[in-house]
Image 1 (cartoon, helix red, strand yellow):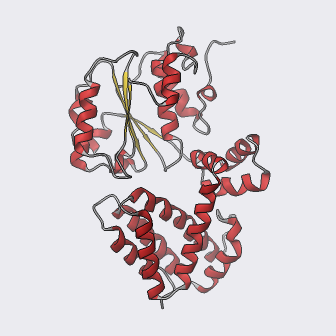
Image 2 (cartoon, helix red, strand yellow):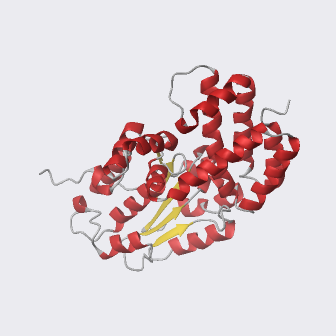
Image 3 (cartoon, helix red, strand yellow):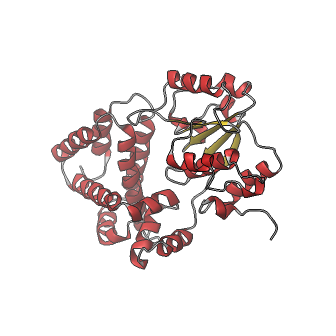
Length: 338
């Protein structure tokens, strides 16, 4: 044996290079005070950050044996009860506010309670307002010796350049679909269902693993695609009623609406591929007939317009956009009203 642990022992799937990079920084004692892990939602950013946090504070005697998964620190992080790990996340789906970031900065200035480092993981940092992001800048410029900051972002370009320049970038990419399918089958998922989930995941291993554990996730997807079908087939009044229904469902939770729009994006992409007779298998393969029918009666230009409108609405959710008005505009922009 070489004495070195492998990236796979961190429990990270599809991002071996990232886990290996962080592992080697520990082996050579070259870890940074700040990291920016970026990638699509449910791609595995949080899992990588937590695995790294375990490795940083693991009590195993040899660095090559960290994280051991069995020591007090590793178990505390797994349970979500480690006093030296700060999970910084906004409330009710809203982005972190400036007061919360300042509170985390004050905690990072303190000595660790029982571990080697005091670690803060900032979730959805790209959704944080620029002024609130700026509140972290002083801590990044003059970090406490035992403070580690890990920023998670779906869109790193929305993180201030002054923040990005002071953090080591770790951009994650979608995992190969065949790898995801293999992992799902190994966990007891039948081949046909594993194939569908792998396609729907678009390389997001976190989403795929949730899907085999929680039937509600796929049920929610079916419900939202049924909703979209009704919207596209409906007239103006049908669409406005759907906007009202969806806005009442999500309330002020913009993250919940973002989940719905992500599902709709995969559908419109499939329709666009079908419009161009692309041989690529659609993500929503269980809706193939429906997708073919819509593509046959909708121009590729209008389908592209639906994709642009959906992305524009998702971008608007980062601001103080009114959810009901945003949905009204989006659903009236969708093809079919002509």
